[in-house]
Length: 456
Image 1 (cartoon, rainbow, N blue to C red):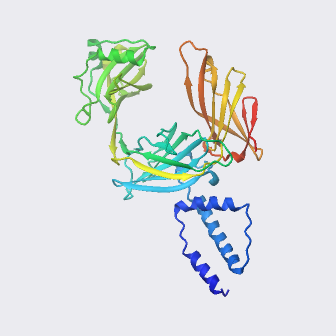
Image 2: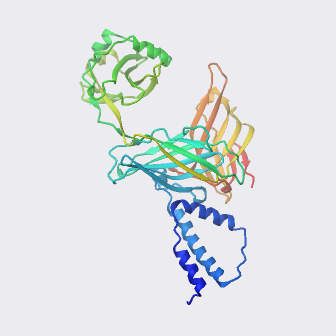
Image 3: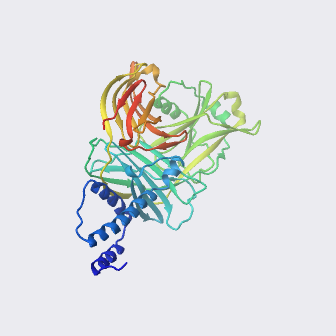
């Protein structure tokens, strides 16, 4: 085809256009905004420019679909469903101390925000251990930094070259059809590699320690009670396997509560930590894994205690048991926090106040629906503390999908008949994965026997 000089200039100009990652989302948004406007064309040159621009934009939009982070599959499995229209592909990277951190993708709605980060070594070498991203915090339009209410991090030993972390935040923005642009700033790190050596056997005579300083506690005791009790025991002379590397980790105490033996280690709030993860039974050579574990801080916040419980152990067993200690050493990869900022138009969410009573006495006072999931707040009878309302979602194509109650916060007081709750639900994708939904796909939400329709 022979082109006029004007047409040749247009083609040459289009061929010089670059499409960096950050322009992809803007191009897609611009095309959506223009779908309802008809632009008159008055010349063959404009016709050619329109055709070539449409081809370029189609290729750009397709790239936006293909460039979603592999972290979605790494974290949520191959069945995860992440529509392109609710996702902001970012791929914003910074390299410091030989470590590359990337803000990969985000979902930003007018009631909740999610983001995926990755970390890998700049030279491509494998990560030796799992990585902690530190406190990833978010500021919205210059607000105070907030921490995520949900975190999922995965370290895949089959793909040690990269690790992903998924973060969710609440956002009390306006739930409207055309929300305005917001500015988001994430502060990430410092990032540490977490080294976990194999458990090491401590040569400790538990029987002698207990005979010298016996301690029996009640199962209902508070953290302060346990701290005070362990302060009465003095095991400063007891050696642990890695004293040379972590001298501040100490054997803090031992006690019986009911039919369970508890062993406690202490360590500073920041730095290396440890726990007695198992017991070696010298009579049989078998390893007895701990049944429970938990930490609590000292009242002055300088030291943490970690207790592990071993049910069925009695004082008669102690001469034949040796503690096996598991250590955790954070090794810093980056020595400073990194900052990632971007602006976007949040996608729509839905929220309304309710006065809904369920058959079990649960009262739901508020519901929020976003592409990330559903959040309920309300109260329920204390005797039903192991129950969460069941929720299903009807899509506009008529199909029904289930949800999974992934987190619940409870506030109550002694003797109260009702507790306040704040529950978060994820949209299921099959039995083993998760999906994310634009609000436009949701027709109604059913809670128990009550259906709440979402206005068009």
